[in-house]
Length: 163
Image (cartoon, rainbow, N blue to C red):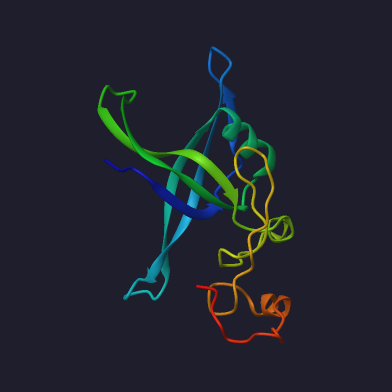
């Protein structure tokens, strides 16, 4: 069986870090994920609001480095949860349990508060706290035109592929 989800969206509000009675950190947040297609009637993209929960080191990482409006890439699994509301009605909720959360934008882009689309917007960090660098996407792959300035033409390319 396979239950694996990858989401990319912006945090709808600041993450809420709590601890269980045994002291285990848990954070919950809502991710605003734009759909890939536009509504035929309105011409606008719809947004899905997806609840995410993360535990332990991932929870601490999210609460420390993510705020409302930051772009996040979430890797995890879908989980269905049954619960009873105040009136005694049985309810079911779907949420994503995050295994890893990565930066989907650079710190500079995230602080601006404005929306800039595309995965290749800058660095990211795995939930373990290690830092890496995501390559910028060339124009036409969701990146902006200013990113193409980062690419240089290869002068010694002999056209031979390495495989």
